[in-house]
Length: 212
Image (cartoon, rainbow, N blue to C red; front, side, top):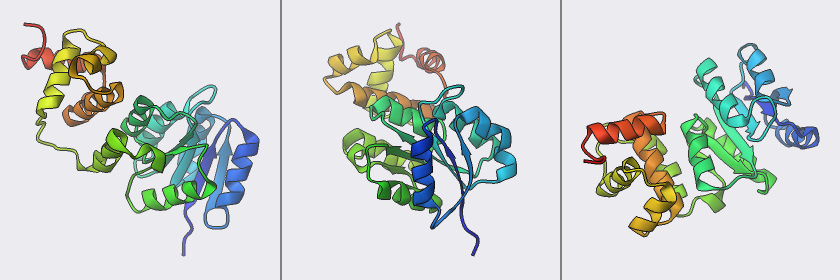
C-alpha cells in the first residue's frame, strides 16, 4: 500500500526533526524546509499529500505558503502548526486553504489525529479551539451556503462594518465577543467569495447595507 507523502516546513530544526521521527513510522517524510519559499521551489516534484507548515517563518510565512501551495497542488492537505490561538488567525488559516490547525502546545498525538482527519477529507483544529464560534466555523466550513444568503446577524455585522466601525466597536454595539464578529465577517466573505475587506464594504454599500 502506498504511504502518504509528507513535507515539513519549520525554521526550528530540532522541532522539525522531532516531528519527522514522530511521523516516519506511518508516513514518508519526503522533504524538510526552513521556510515556505524553499518548499514552493520543489513542491511539485516532491508530490506531497500533506504539508505541515509552521505559521511564523522568515522569508515566507506559513499562511502565504499555504495559499501558494494550494494553487500549485490543489489536492494537497495543509496543516498549520503554530502557537497562535486567536480567532482571527484560525479563520485566516482556513480561508487560505488549510485543512488543519494544530497548536504547538498540543500533545504529539494530536498532529497524527489531524493528519488522519484531513486525509479523510475532514477539517481539524486543536480541541481547545473547538468550543463556541471557532468550533462552529471549523465544523461548518465545508457546508457553506452557495445561495449567498446572509443571516440577520451577518447583515447587522456587515452594516456596521460598512459604516466604518471597527470589529471591536461592532462587538460592543451588538454586545457580542470580538472573535464572534471576526467569524461573522469571514463567514460572510466565504459565502460571497470575497477576498478583501474593501470588496466586502463595496458589496455592503451596493446592497444597501452601508451608509445611506
